[in-house]
Length: 222
Image: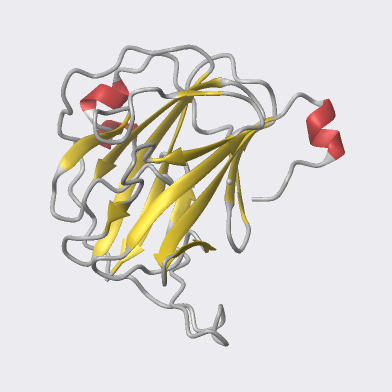
């Protein structure tokens, strides 16, 4: 997918935290995947299997202020920094309880392209600003060749293809991270909580983040 992500986007996120979680000082970031349909941006399930040439973007909302960094490993093997960048917007500061659209440009979208499979979008959210990578460095893992599979029990009425292996995920193999992401100091992923709603995903930490958090967002397309 060409410059996909962020989005989800990425930064695609779930429902609002419960009162108990909020009282414990939980941090969360909610990500909405939006698709351009008949001249209108519509929120879609982050597990939706996208088609070639679909236009998508991310809408992001967090309950804390910080800085967002997004990179993408496409199904063609191309790896690139998606946010912040000259094309997607250079201001990656996010403020609590405000909505942000990624990419933050006049064009404001990414076009799906490349072989069928899953884009692997790496998200880093940090309470303090990090050094911006001068140039992307190839990750240690190969592009995903996983062919999207439809779950017939989900969204059958509308005929949508939902791939349950897509969406936000914890980082399982840090050895496969891109070099510019792997060098981020004191990143944590194992303590993150992932929740899924029909049209948003929530990535949360049960306690306030004291340093950068990292996770991946998988976008399936045919």
